[in-house]
Every structure is written in C-alpha cells, then in structure tokens.
Image (tube, rainbow, N blue to C red; front, side, top):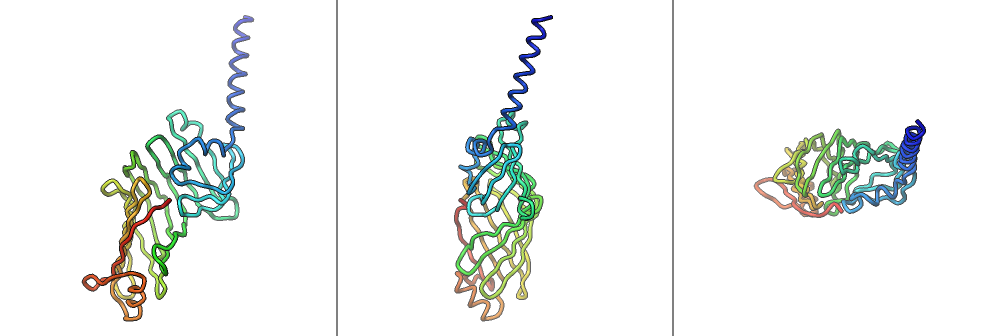
Length: 236
C-alpha cells in the first residue's frame, strides 16, 4: 500500500509540475522556438504566458496587425505543430483567427481581418478585408484555400472595390478579385507563393482621358481598350 501511494504521489506531483510549467511558459519563448518568425511574424514586444499572452505592434511581413492577444494550443504540440490563436486587444478591433506552424508547413485558419497593404506602386494602395479566410501551405505549395476577400483599391484620381474567393492555383495562393468602375469591369489577381513572393495583375476598363492619364502615370499600359498594370514583390 505504501509503495502504491508513493507512486501515485509522484505521478500527481509530476502532472502538477508539467501543468505549472505549461501555465507559466513564456509566450515570447514559444514564438521564438516556432517557425513563425522565419515565416514573417514579428512584434515590437511580447509578454505573458502561452495561455494569456500579448503581442504589441504585431505584423506579418509588411502587413501590420496591431496589438493582439495570443495563446498557444498545447494539444497541437503533440502533433508536431505550433498553433497560435489570436484576437484583438479589447477596444482595438483587430484581426481574429489562428496560425499553425510546423516543419515545412504553414497554415492560417479562419482569419477575419482588415489589413492595410503597402502601395503596390506610387499613388496606388489597397486595404484587404479577409472574411473566414483559410490557407494551408506544405513544402511551399498551396494545398487548400477558402474564404472571402475584398479589396478597396485607392488611386490618385479614383478608386474601386473588388471581391472574390481565395483558392489555390498552380501551387500558389490565388486571390481573384473582380468588380466594376463607372467605365466598366475591373480586376485584381494576386498570386502568392509559399516563399512569400507574389505577382499581381490589375485590369481597369478605359475611362475618361483624365482618369486614364492618371493611371498611365502610375504605370498602367493600354492593352486592347483595357489599362493593365503588372508587378511582383515579396510579403516579407
């Protein structure tokens, strides 16, 4: 009886110790041990534990995310993945969702966010709004993507609102966004590779001479009655 009681006591103590370590494990250390920083995540300051942490001035690549409440799912660790859930700090109205990092893989799950994007070219910028957006990359190849994406594109002389549904195409994440302007159809197609490189193509129906001149000054070229701008870059 004494030996059994001792073993039980040791087991209870071990479980309590593990739980205590998990409760107190620093979020900053957990983030640094994951592959998220290499994949583009950064923050001005990280504090708290994996159960109730905070990332101030967070961002992913060039996209700012603001101040976030962050927690790590211990159960995901048993599958070799680090799954971080995030939500905005109260009163800030920031993004919600989760990101999953593992060796050779990355996923974003059910992201809802409005992300101001850096200008693709001088005089043109966009705010991307993600609604229940998910994407999974494995070995830098897009395996699955879903969710709604809208973009408010701002130009020097005009603007346009575009919308579409995320998908995968040829191993890359594809955001095929379409809409209309007073002059006609408009589209923005963005392809994002697993290494964070992206290409984009914007097409806008020709409009008034003043509008067309402004777009031409921003780098658009005429192609069969449509103004087209193509480019590339990196998200990190």
